[in-house]
Length: 341
Ligand code: CP3
Image (cartoon, rainbow, N blue to C red; front, side, top):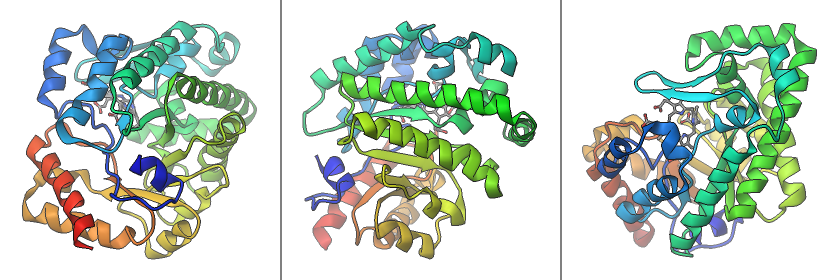
């Protein structure tokens, strides 16, 4: 339970490590199972497959946490914007405009799909060593809404955000819906057995100035508040990717840990570690390339953060071409480090 204890800022024997997208294409056993399954969405919505995939990296590397195999885009799917997945192109949500979304979405429309995730969580918990906590997750409204208006193109996100600013009333209605559905889904995962929740805001850095408050910081805080009101003992990790000098603005009483990127400044580290736990922040590229540099960079990360409660992770998801042996090395270096000090 090193992960949970660290999140609660209690002393631990080891330093917890897990990696974002730890269940994925860099694993030969994932690729094999994917070949046998009928596509990515089928993997996500078949509890046995989702559960088996969740356990794969735990069996291989002995990480300190499992994260349920799922996706942030199942929230729009559950609200009535169908999600498909095209090999080589990624996730695609049915084209809808904001008026259709506001009038057609309902929390109960496709709830059945979310129940499949809860079933996968229950299955996983039965098989997982009770010392290894299971992380449930959701996407933050900003990142999820970018995909709702257009999938997977960074340049277009700026355009989408400026259209949000012209449609403030409608957007705030849509965000309210998303926030409620997202908090509800986090609570559903907790009821099924998830012991930690991580909120992904991968595209937070598209919003600048006051927009970051309106579209990322405030919605995340409202979601955390809703979750904690009903589940006060479940720690929450937030991942507002690459917000640089503004990580500290995400400090909030209902947030336990901030997952940071390589862009974190000394001043922000100090500010966060006074109150909250940091998770991060090794570059996925360094992990991809391996070698002596990998070892040095892991140690740099540990030296930078580990004087205070700290969770070792990457600055973003692991890259699909990463050699398994590099991940093995990562876990080994971290385990040894704790013995050295
Ligand atoms: O961390 C884990 O192991 C849990 C599983 C997980 C997935 N997606 C599985 C997945 C998590 C936490 C996510 C979150 C997610 N999904 C985010 C936020 C975090 C991030 O990495 O940015 C986003 C933006 C999505 C939406 C999404 N899903 C995209 C843009 C893509 C295609 C791009 C890509 O990485 O391939 C996916 C597909 C996806 N989700 C895969 C996995 C393992 C790849 C599926 C495959 O092609 O085999």
